[in-house]
Length: 205
Image (cartoon, rainbow, N blue to C red; front, side):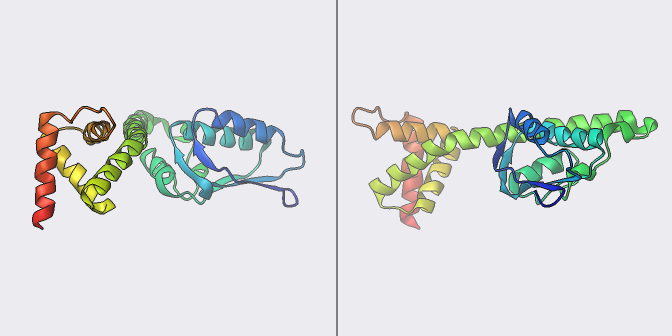
């Protein structure tokens, strides 16, 4: 608190449960609070629950007739705001849905639905990328230890093997990592051939 101003600084991810946590925090603010500002620079990931988080803040401001802001967005959360058609400087400045003129309501609703579909697809891709990262990093380590290549070279080898064998990058990484274990089975023939070809290309450069 700074006089009658509350500054909230969320950290980490805005996912399911974040809106409820914010509602609890807002309910605990002193009765004399005249303004609420959120510094979002510490938020590094959010899914569609982040939009619910913003609605909780907007509704609180309306009920209490308080000015509320949510500024300093960066990285992936800023991209989510863009896809949702919100102001990336402060999404709480964007017009509320009930303030849209009625002749445009159906068009705006369709655009919002399309943007949200894109948003959900991008969030799901990010989730898959985050889930895949550990096994891909392990596979890079296997290549670096086995062939003495750099981390970047190992990444390019994996990616090239994925393209040559028409196999998902995660699947290539999983099969390579599994083959490095004590009794691990070798990668499938197509993946082995693609890895050999990618390694041969690296050697010839």
